[in-house]
Length: 496
Ligand SMILES: [Ca+2]
Ligand SMILES: [Ca+2]
Image (cartoon, rainbow, N blue to C red):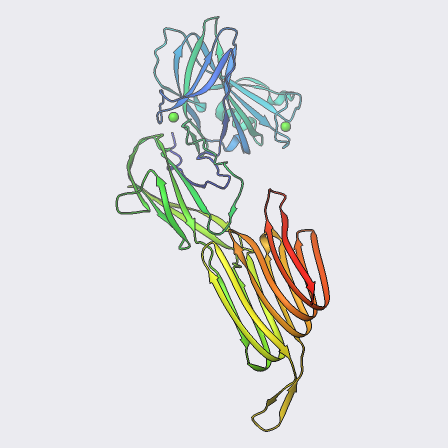
């Protein structure tokens, strides 16, 4: 018999849909009259196998193997499994359902399709309870189809492959059938089909489906699940699993813990045939960092234009985690990539410009949970002349204008205030983010125009003032539930 498949090792990401260690998908079910279930106490290859059992009233029970990608019968050069009688009198039947017209199913009424059946083995209570191998190459098959050329009584496996060339395997049943009326049972393990090995070990069937998300927010953690198994029929020795973390992640914890003094190495040593194991590792992506940007010109008397912007925006990136699994006879590696989403983030701006006298004060504060910017200025418009170095002067006579805004793109919130045509403007503003909630507080005395806007998703509040006013406002965006709303604490405005 040809030896196939080196130890298959899978790295699957917790937050992604992973594949199992085998691409073969089998299903088991239990009813009142029979059961097909994983038995953890009896195995030929690894500690587990499938136990098929029939109780009172039960006639047959099977392991069903479905093919996501069909395999041609002709190319299926290996097909074998181990079985062990346990009790009663029973027959084990193998049924291979074949598709000939490419519709992905085998229909007994369709002459293009066919079914192969073989009685693999029969036992009685007197039969010795030991593991024995069944190889398709040793079996005789009966072919049934609506097409007479695909019907036969007894043909060996190579003969079937030749006769049914071009047909694809879509389903296989390994079926326990009761002989007589007594309860009966038996075990199946170590099924080899083409390049695939199914050992019916719980981890081998593992499909990691805890979340369909493939991306995370910056600062969130990623959990990697490394599942390894030995599909060989002999021990794997000196098995070592080594992780290579992305530089933008930090190791947090793992189960089982890594080798002492390391955070990325697990010495497994020996792994017996069919044995599987799993390592769950949690890493954290880097936390958000803030950028502050300021530029401007300030004069006591003259023309002033000042702009300030602070933002926590961060572009998205990908984190790749690689694992190298090595043992005495081979090395292999696999990797998992996670998208860290861009941080739409928060930004705040404060601008002012005009000519005349100007007196300003400002402060910026940042921490991991708070961002804040405060500024206060007093300005009065009058014409000023700026003397040029080459002689002559430029006369500025510009009214005062100012803007302040606070944006939280993630929550689609925008607060803004715009002052124009002011010949007198005293403005203090404080904007930022506290516990991820944006706020804008301001107080103004002005003679000119003011526009105050508050936007939250599809709702907008806009107020305009023209004249001589004293004004105070506090704005907060509060998230009360999934359906968030803006809470405008107040705007107080009185004419001077
Ligand atoms: Ca078909
Ligand atoms: Ca097994």
